[in-house]
Amino acid sequence: MNTDELEWALLKAERRVLEIQTKLHRWARDDPHRRFDDLFNLVADPGFLLVA
Image (cartoon, rainbow, N blue to C red; front, side):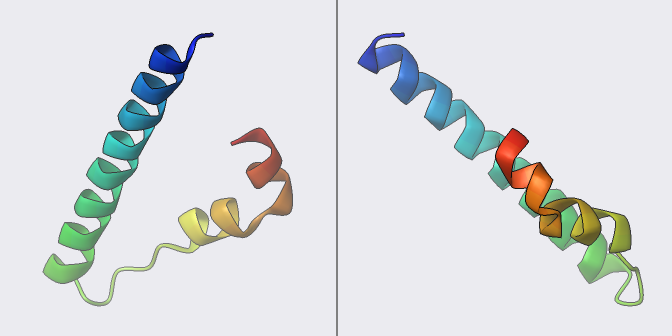
């Protein structure tokens, strides 16, 4: 993988994370009592960080 491909992959990943964050923010704003337990468990799992 050359540098340009790596930079492009990082930009795509950053954009995807921003899209997900925006969606989660919108859901939390629209329903302040909504819980995101499954998402927290996934992100807080140390094994997830190794795979991601």
